[in-house]
Length: 126
Image (cartoon, rainbow, N blue to C red; front, side):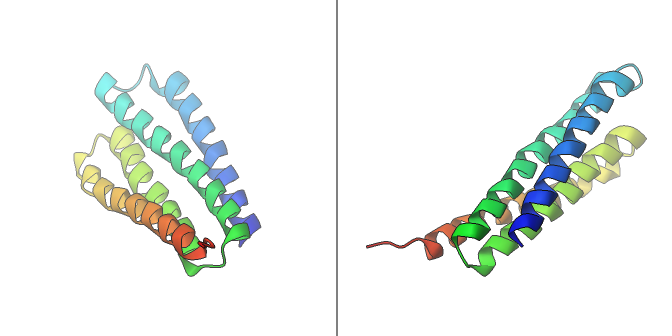
């Protein structure tokens, strides 16, 4: 799974750059400032967690733990639900998409806790 997490992280980061440019150039004149800020928050958290997926790829080379893959899957879910719901909210103006955003946030939190558990259980303490 190591190369898969790196690949997924690279894809998510690349899409984050594309979406960030799209927001800055194509959406700036089309969205209200508050909706543009919502879109930008989605991009920012996508980029943070794209980097987290790269960290998961590295962690997979270091620790043989199911928690590593759990972190990767929950980061991926978080990107899809957290960032995806913010993109949809900003583009459609339908505020109900925001009800899904905390679910993605919980996935991010669980991903970081999973990565912590992988590190603690995988480390060789004296």
